[in-house]
Length: 121
Image (cartoon, rainbow, N blue to C red; front, side):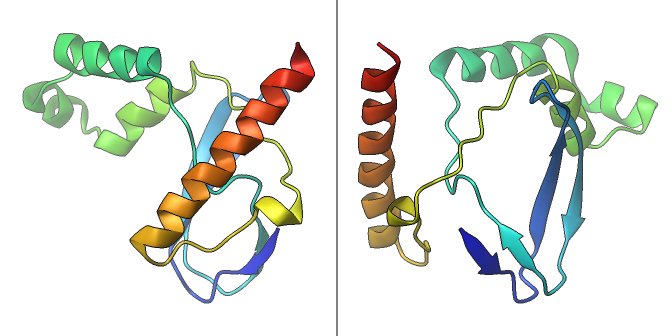
């Protein structure tokens, strides 16, 4: 779905051919962007991986010693995860401005993923 960002801060995520995150950048310009998926899904296992990583390897002293930001650490960990990006049919696209929009989008995406799962089987 094509949308104009209208100066709203965005995060551009760059992926390689294997859909692994290679870089990201903040951007707050005024250009038309293509959105593939409005809501990202992380599995419970992904969340567990992040939690273990932070508890085992990252603390404030380490962060200061290496001059790292939390975004750098998150990017390094995210690079181990593959992204699945699917172009959405226009009927699945929507703007999220209020909580009700979010709840409606969740039900739409749930139906979308159920349809995708049934197609794969």
